[in-house]
Structures are given as structure tokens and as C-alpha cells.
Amino acid sequence: MHVEHDAPLAQLTTLRLGGPARRLVTAVTDEEIIATVVEADAAGEPLLVIGGGSNLVIGDAGFDGTVLRVATTGFELSGTRLELAAGEVWADAVRRTVEAGLAGIEFLAGIPGSAGATPVQNVGAYGQEVASTVTEVVAYDRRERATVTLSGAECEFSYRHSRFKAEPERYVVLRVRFALEDAAGLSSPVQYAEVARTLGVEAEQRVELRKAYETVLRLRAGKGMVLDPADHDTWSAGSFFTNPVLDPEQRAAFEARLDGRAAPLYPAPGGCTKTSAAWLIDQAGFTKGYGTGPATLSTKHTLALTNRGAATTADLLALAREIRDGVRAAFGVELVNEPVTVGVAL
Ligand SMILES: Cc1cc2nc3c(=O)[nH]c(=O)nc-3n(C[C@H](O)[C@H](O)[C@H](O)COP(=O)(O)OP(=O)(O)OC[C@H]3O[C@@H](n4cnc5c(N)ncnc54)[C@H](O)[C@@H]3O)c2cc1C
Image (spheres, rainbow, N blue to C red):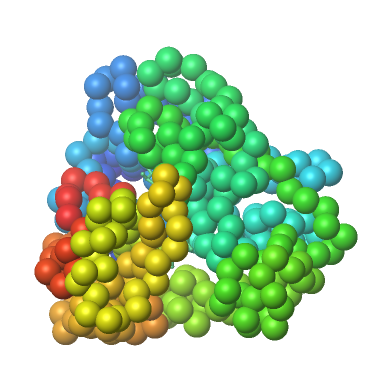
């Protein structure tokens, strides 16, 4: 276990933003994770768990407590069953499953961050979510003071949400178990129109697994959604806003403000409708690259708020608020941030 004091956090986040941690503990075994959590809880010390820092907006004042950096390793494949230690780099784990010829998480290629964070917001992209392959999550339950195993159903996954996000102070994920599929070298059925179009297939068709993986990586890179330290468009937390889900009343109010424009509208559970945050932002006048300050929209993707190198968290949040307020004024729809905010709020 490695302990530092007054440790800068910006370098541990993909936005490269945030002040120092009073104490930073890097844990490389499950026992070290649990010991750090138990000690912090016993002392009534605020605790922030951090993996790859790719979904975090940390305030400029930093974190007055213990930051636990999860750096455990472990990739165990047995048949189609995969168990990952929480600290495993997700993108590397996906590549290794593709190399092993297994389908199930190939469309989640190139997503930054740790395996342990994937169940937290039910990571998803290009028509796939971890919810469909996670069978169990082993976690330390801070309320029960015990290590527990939650089934996929007990994780209560929904769009960019889970039990872990609903109870943010309760669980520290230690291990994630997946059921993958041996589809004889083929991918899971293609779900996402852009992927199908790029591959020249119909939706629901399977394609060569490696081709699916490489296509997704190429599409992501073109949008600045694969980390590249030299490219400021990737100094982000990915999509900054979730796609709004509207109930029937909200949908009617939204449609009344469209003035003949065709907004993307997709069915969502419970008779609701999902629309596109990227479309709303663009149509409200915030196009790619918007902004003149040290924080701007990515030049490759309307949904990514980026640090051009000299930004502070205050700069980033000012841009986020301008966009949220602009979309509300134009369409009456409230955008909600996807990344977790620490010591700040939108
Ligand atoms: C360029 C880019 C592209 C992205 N693309 C996507 C995408 O396509 N789809 C998508 O869903 N997301 C995407 N993201 C967001 C992000 O990569 C994911 O949410 C990722 O799972 C976060 O992992 P992390 O380890 O970096 O989490 P962190 O940012 O370190 O933490 C995020 C949250 O999870 C908690 N957490 C982390 N580890 C644990 C643990 N072991 N136990 C309990 N809680 C934990 C933290 O406390 C925090 O609340 C993208 C981000 C970037 C920068």
C-alpha cells in the first residue's frame, strides 16, 4: 500500500482537473482496499474511491479526506467466464477477451477507466452495456461491514445507472464477473445503426469479432473518445451529459418547441422517450469546438467538454452551466451531468 499526503489529483483524472487529496492511498490488493476503507470509516474520514479518473470532476479545492486509488490487477478467464479485479484497465481487458475469441464486451472497446467502475454507471456504448454480461459483483459493503456478492439483478442496472450509483457511499467494488459468449469467432449481434452502416451489415447481424472491435475503436477515435495525451479533445470525462429521458408530458412539451425540426426520439422503458443530448446541444447553438476559454467543447464531439491545457474545474463548470441553461431555454429540457462531481455541483 502506498500512502501520500497533499497529493495532486488532477494527474489522476482524464480531465486533468482537481485540487489535492489530503491523503492518497494506492491499494494493490483487495485486503489493502478493505483495510483503507475500514480505517477511514472508523475515523469518520471522508472517502473517495478512484479508478481511472475518467468519469470524475473534482473541485479545484481538492478532497479533504482519503482518496483510495484502486490499483489491483487480475484477469481470470475460465471458458466463457471472466473475472476482473477492480483495478484492471478496462480497455486492455476488452482487447484480451477479443484476442481469446469471446464476444459480449467487444463494442465497449476503448472506454477508459477501470473494470471496477464499469458496473457503477453501467458503462455502455454502441448498443452494448455491461448490464447484459455482468453476472456478479464482489464488493465491500461499508454499511454491513462485510464483503458481499451481488448478482447482476441485484446490481439494479438501468441506463447509466445502478445500485452502486444510487448508494454512492455504500459499496467499493473489488471484482466483477462476466459471462461472455463463444460465438465461433463472431461478435454479438450488431445493435447500433452507425456500426452496422460502417460494417455494411444489417442490425442484428453478427460480424467477425476482431472487425467489430477494430471498427468501434476507429469510430471512437474519430470522435476523440479514445485517450490520447497529445490530443486535447480527449482531455475530457467522455460524454458530459446523459441523454434525457422524457415522460409523455415532457415529450409533448418538447415536441411543441421543435418548430418542425426532427429531433431523435427513441422508446425508453416505462412509456418514456429518450432523446439525444448531443442533438439538443448542437441545435441550441453549441456546436463542436464551442468556447473561447481554456475549457471548450471537443472539436470532434458535441457531448465532450474538454480542458485545452490550462483550465480549472471552475472554467469547465462555467461552460457546462452555459450549455445546460442554453438547452433549457431553447427546448425546456434539463440536461444532467454524467460524470460524478466531487466537492462541486453543476
Ligand atoms: C474519452 C472518454 C470516453 C468515454 N466513453 C464512455 C462510453 O463510451 N461509455 C461510458 O459509459 N462511459 C464512457 N466514459 C466514462 C468513463 O470512462 C466510464 O464511466 C468509466 O467506467 C469510469 O471508470 P474509472 O475507473 O475512470 O472511474 P472513476 O472516474 O475513477 O470513478 C467514477 C465513479 O466510480 C466510482 N468508482 C470507481 N471505482 C470504483 C470501485 N472500485 N468501487 C466503487 N466505486 C468506484 C468513483 O468513486 C466515482 O464515483 C468515457 C470517458 C472518457 C474520458
